Amino acid sequence: MSLTRIIKEKALELGFVAVGVATAEPFTLYAEEIAGRPEMYAWGKTLSQRASVRDLDVTWFVDPARFIPGVRSLVVVTDSYFEEDFPPSLAGKIGRCYLKGLFCPEDNFHSQRRRELKKFLQERGIKTIYGPAPARLSGARAGVTDYGKNCFAFAKEAAGRSSWIVNEPFLVDRELEPDSPSLRVECPEDCRKCMEACPTGALYAPLKMDPRKCIAYQTYFSPGEIPREVRSKMGTWVYGCDLCQEACPRNQKWMEKDKPMNSKLLERASDFSLTRLLTMSQDHYEKKVWPLLYYIRKENRKLWQRNAAVALGNQGDPRAIPALVSALEDPEPLVRAHAAWALGKMGGKQARGALEKRRQLEEDEGVRKEIEDSLNYA
Ligand code: SF4
Ligand code: SF4
Image (cartoon, rainbow, N blue to C red; front, side, top):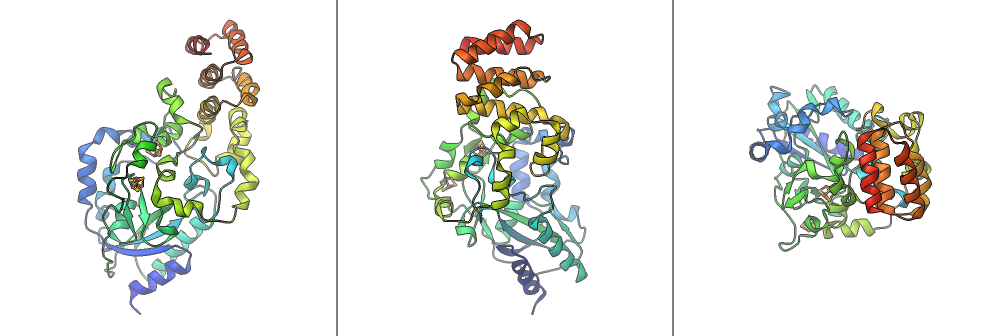
């Protein structure tokens, strides 16, 4: 059996839903795309200063030889993250791939099988590095995924040919037999549903997304106040956003398919309720939330509280008013300001009364202004 075949069989045995092999020449298409709009990616270069991830300079990934000088091939495995259903209380709040913990600090079967595949390659004397390549382009070059106009990779065979998957490239120093690339868009010509579903205009044209405008970016990478004009567009999302995938007809069949409930997540769902997130202690954050949803740094719990306040304001359920009123007393001005906005958005006697009372006591100028704006709105 050829080495390529042996590796592919191992990947499938480990539970990856697809595997392909790509050649390792530089990703020139990717380089051209980034060079055409560098301002949209500049934020990544200092990302580690405000998020618990490394700095992200997307230009690094253009040439695989930067990471392994003798790189010859890419083994691209595909992981499916929507094989089990998600608790309904989390729908529309946290993106599915994050809930599934694909790349989180917690040890889980996703990280275990990545480690096992790496070990398997190394035991055969293959030098390998996991990760540093454009994942979606690698998948298309390896023939395991194609593209949607929403910029997502769609499985060619696995997971009902949906986009609820991720590609994970392993760079290797061996010449393997490459698969036929599938670098094409497989959407109906007249479909624009994903672009119409994007509330912020982040997805501004087929295959064009401005990450700075994406709700996902706003929820976990934006360090301070969320602009007022963006808040009401965020709906109830507090970490990521799935709208452009949910709207896609290519995903409907897989979304509607009966799947077993993810029981572990069901047990944990109340840890992530919006009111719990708004009022959570540091201990709750560090022990229950951060190990699974870790992009926001441990010392930045206030960003979660900010997001929860905005989501509750948009949800408009009056049962959340007491939690928002108590957040008006939070030591962090950022939390008080967004709680004030949410109460103003919800309106009504109780919300208005709480805002008026807080206005008398509030010492932070920015929060007082937010309260006054919210009272005009309420
Ligand atoms: S994830 Fe949400 S905000 Fe981001 S591009 Fe898709 S629909 Fe737009
Ligand atoms: S919504 Fe339509 S255009 Fe967008 S990715 Fe899906 S099929 Fe393609």
